[in-house]
Structure formats: C-alpha cells, structure tokens
Picture (spheres, rainbow, N blue to C red):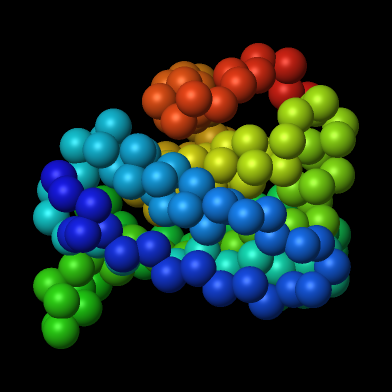
Length: 165
C-alpha cells in the first residue's frame, strides 16, 4: 500500500488549543499505520476534524444522545467492509474522525504524555472504529488495545498501559 492512495483530510474547527507543528503529519502517519496493519486494500479517504469541548459535546448529544464532551467520535461510512467510493478517485470513504483538542490536552496531562501522543492514540482508536471494531464488545476491546499499542510502537510513541476506563 502506498501513501498516495490514502487521503487524510484534516480540518481545524477550533481555536482553544494551538495545533502543534507536525501534528497533522502525525495524524496522517497514524491513519496510514492503522490501515497497513489491518491490510486494508485499495485507496482510502478519511476525514479528521479538530474541535473544542463545546463542539464535541453538541455532536455527542446529537448522534449518541449523551450530553457531555468526549475525547473522540467516529462516524464510519462503511458497513461490514463495504464502503462508498469517491467516483473521482475510486477511494473508499472510510468516514469521519472528530477529536476534541481540549480533551486531548486534558488527557495528555492526566496520563503524563504529550498532546501529540494523545492525538495519535485517539486517531488510531477512531480509525479502528471506522474499520468496524467496537470496544463495547469485550473481545474487540482487547484487540483494539493491542492494535493501538502496535501502532504507537510503529510511530515511535510511548505505549501506555495505564489508561483509566
């Protein structure tokens, strides 16, 4: 799989947390690492949007009926490995990832690592959701954690096994 087949569209829709230099490239590298690990075939497109807590709280209430800010939301476009395809590029449209940069910053401090590492972790977690993983199922939860750790290692980022559930 080559990088030019994977398009990651990144939008910053918030102003509360400065986006560190290199973070967009790290998000792209994370998406590519997950798709490679999962042996995803063919061109793909993923949208990643950075928002603040108010914005993600609104989305969480609208789409999940949960009235609180969360760290990341995933909006998969596929079902059982079947995805819509962009007619211009032939890319499979995997879906949207929405990351609260405020929550990412809070959690980076809480877990004692950088915001870059936190955003990479949230991205890996969310892309696995786009590919059909569901951590509400116990087996998927274990598999997701293992896969997230593999991606963190591949990116040269700290693997942290002290997450609070």
